[in-house]
Length: 256
Ligand code: 13P
Image 1 (cartoon, rainbow, N blue to C red):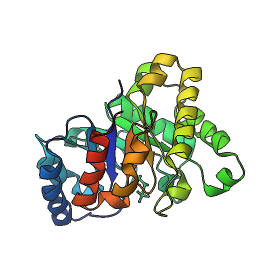
Image 2 (cartoon, rainbow, N blue to C red):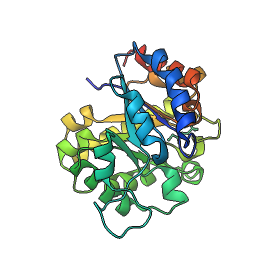
Image 3 (tube, rainbow, N blue to C red):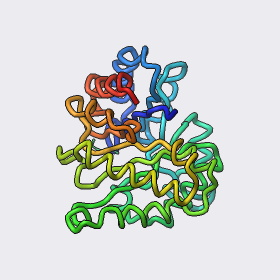
């Protein structure tokens, strides 16, 4: 009942229109027959316009990598949800661990952004996940529960159902060290149980929970086989059309 979703988070790469469009011109034909899953690409802001133009009338949707929680005004350097919606973004990634840890975004800030994105009909992809230190101290679930409770505070059932949760253990991001499918599934079940207890069982069944952290063509199909893993958020391997399309195909062929 959940449609899997694969996202390519380009992070601060391919910010020049020519590099972004070169990549997408290769990707579009490689994934054109994929119809069981949603495909989302999150380029830097500087390439949103050419990327949105190029992917019109394709099966690729576009996400921004961040946004601000105000609509307009004196917020130098920030980007409004209105701009993103008007340009044609369908999704927005919020609370990525790089924004939390490097740019000091708190769960409270992320909560404001999630609500604002939903107000403007942008589907949030909200990242949560523990550092190595919490995992090793056996406190991963406690850490994730706090992120969950604050980041999704005061959302209605319908709003949470439109939200995608990306479980991204920070120790697995860009390290080549993937969570095993069993480790990831355990946390996905934990998050789904949190949704069931704080919302209801219908919402818990509907919300899509992606895994992110060193997904590669070689490990994708093992991760996507797990019942509670509804796709992935891919960093490094989303930068090449070939590797990203292989991951997309692994998800499309997986018996979700
Ligand atoms: P990597 O796939 O490079 O580990 O990055 C994952 C990520 O942070 C996606 O948002």
